[in-house]
Length: 174
Image (cartoon, rainbow, N blue to C red):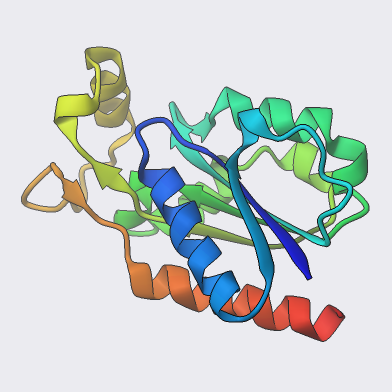
């Protein structure tokens, strides 16, 4: 089975998750391509598409929207699994909020999306400009936040569990 793991990353955290996912699928014997969506020109030879994007200003990165719009027709014919990488997931009810409000639901309706996940990301304020910091502060609900604003909040066990769930689903479809 030929799997594409495409990602849109702003600071590298989402790309690292995609590479981690690629390793999990390779362990299970899949042929895997991991690539930034801006570098992908063809998807016809892939059996399964797994896509992930960082969330900025409450929405997907533009390069993911462009990719999904460009490949909307072929993506509708293939099983698609989608994840987002969002610091909001760490807040109380943040996962539910991200799934409800940070997805481009109109675009997803036309695709063959089999499953969606949201994972917390990594935040390094040294690499975040002031406009992005302002957006983070404006979207933070204030209820709960880690004591250290900087950090890697990705839960690799949750990411692995989701990948194994997806791999099981893909195997059952084959």
